[in-house]
Length: 148
Ligand code: RB5
Image 1 (cartoon, helix red, strand yellow):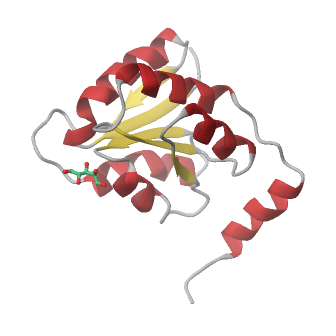
Image 2 (cartoon, rainbow, N blue to C red):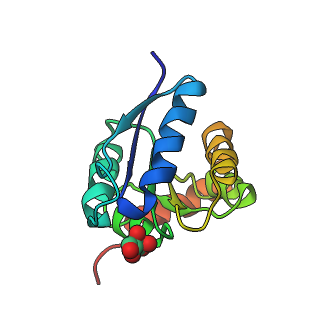
């Protein structure tokens, strides 16, 4: 089996999440769907925690979160230690989020992206490595940031 990738959404990201679960399988990954069961209203922080928790604890390398805009998911997921969730609206953002920020969670806006766009962004996120070097120093400084 391929790498396990937790993926979750609230109601607003549900349809795109369904498509991306299939796409992850096509790419040879093992998606772990921890998202809302359907389009009934639900609360995005619950699903952000379900994906970001295993990444924060080092049990999973990376994950995917989808809400209406991707904003609520990224704000929520980034509260957890060692989580670097990046909202990407295009492939360039996904590539730079990996190369410069070593992003370990991709946040997407289900109400803003067509499935084909989202697939391209997800593929770029998954296939792009971290550049390291000066970017490593900066990423390490993120973990040193803390409450006042
Ligand atoms: C739900 O209506 C919406 O607020 C949520 O999916 C997300 O976009 C929040 O950031």
